Amino acid sequence: MLTNPDLKEPIDIIEDMGVIMIGWGVALEERGEMRRIFGVVNPANEAWQTSVDHICHHVGIGQLVFGLLIEICLAIVRLPARIIDTGDFDEHVVGVSIFFMIVGAFILLRHIYALARSMADPARKGRAAVSR
Image (tube, rainbow, N blue to C red; front, top):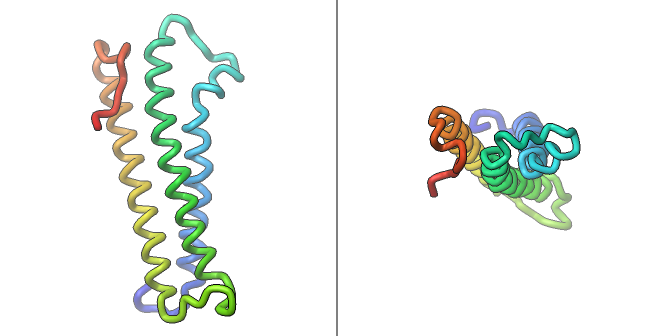
């Protein structure tokens, strides 16, 4: 992005990542409801599954919000200058969207860690939680 003044390709890539984050966020946020819809509720481990649903809900909201912030930044860059003139700040606005993507990646890494911890420790299966 720094060596090529044409932002079309980086914007397309970042936009696609934003869409993926939004979709993944919605799926995570609604994990519990999807389990009920598809009939994969198992009373034997429901307490643990419910706590995992809780973790997924919070992470899903984060992914959804940061994915939408990415899309907002890119929409600002793509709007005609007569509506919002970003002038020479296009690269900075795209940089902000990259920052939001990095924050989303960090949230996912924390999510992976929390899920791995809850799976590795059988005693935690009844109370999976993200350390805040």
